[in-house]
Length: 378
Image (spheres, rainbow, N blue to C red):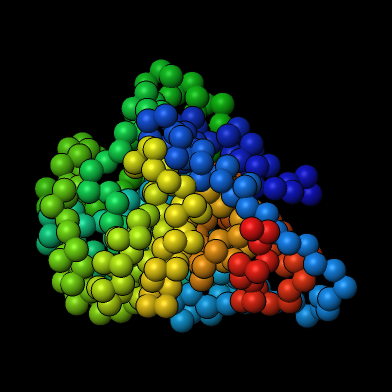
C-alpha cells in the first residue's frame, strides 16, 4: 500500500488483477475513444494560481451536495458491472464511501442489488435509474429504492441509444463471463478474482433478474437488456419520475447549455455535467470544457455537479473553480476496487483527499467552498 501514491498506481494493479473483459469494460470509451481521452487531457490545460504567505491552518474539505453534508465534494458515480471488478463490489464500495463520508450511487445495471447494498450500509445511498421500455419494471425500481431509503435518485438521460465500445464487442462482454477458452485462460491467472467470485452468489444483474417480467435467468437477461433502452425518453418523462420518487432528484448527462436550461425547468435538485465517461457520443466535448458555460447559465437556479475524467484531487478542485458544487469519480474507485477490494476504494478516496488538501493550501485557501475562478490563471 505504501507504494500506491496515485490513481494511476491503482489502475496498474487493477489491470493485473481483474480479467481483461471487465477491466476493459471499465477502461474504455465509444468508437475512437477521443472523448474518453479528452475528459482526462483537458484538465491539464487548466492552471492554478499559486499564492504564498497566507494562513493555511485549519483547512477543511467539508461541503454539501444537494443539502447532504459530505467530507469532501466527491461522490462515487454509478457504474455498471461494479461487482465484476471484485466480488460483491457494490457492497464493498458503498461501505467504503459511507465510512469516508461521501455519497455512493448504485447503478441500475449493478451486480449487487438495491437490497444487497442496503443490507450492509447504515446510511442512505443514492440510486441511479435508467428509464427502460418496461415501465412497470421502472416503477418497481423506484419503489424499491424508496423502500431501501435511498436519499437521492440520479436519472441518467444520455443512454436512450447504447454507444458502441469496441473493446466490449471484441471481448464478448457478459456477466457472468462466457467460459470460452480465452476467458478461462485469462481468469485462471487471476486467482484472487475467481476465488472471490466463487465465494459469492452475486454474479449477474440482481436488480433485474427475478424482478423484470420474463427474466429469470442469465439467458433471458441477455435478450431483455438489448431491447430495453428506450429511444422515446423525453423531457416530459422527468415529471412522472419526479412525482413517483418524491425525493431529491439529480439529472445526469447534461453537456449542452440548452439542455441545462431545460433541466433547470424540471424542478430537479441538481444536474450532472457528464458525457457518460466518453462512452456514448464519441467526439463530444469533455465534461470539464462544457462545465463553465453550463454553470454560468443555470448555476443560480439548480445545483451543478460534474462527472468525467477526474483522476486526482486537483481535477476536483478545478471543477469546483469552474462552477461545480460536487463531483463524481467512477474509474478511480473501480481501479481501487479491482486492485484491493474495499481497501482499494478507500485508498482512492484518500489519494484524492490528500491531493485536494495540499493543493488547497498552495492556492492560499483554507476552505474548499472558497475555491472559485479567481484561483485559476486565465
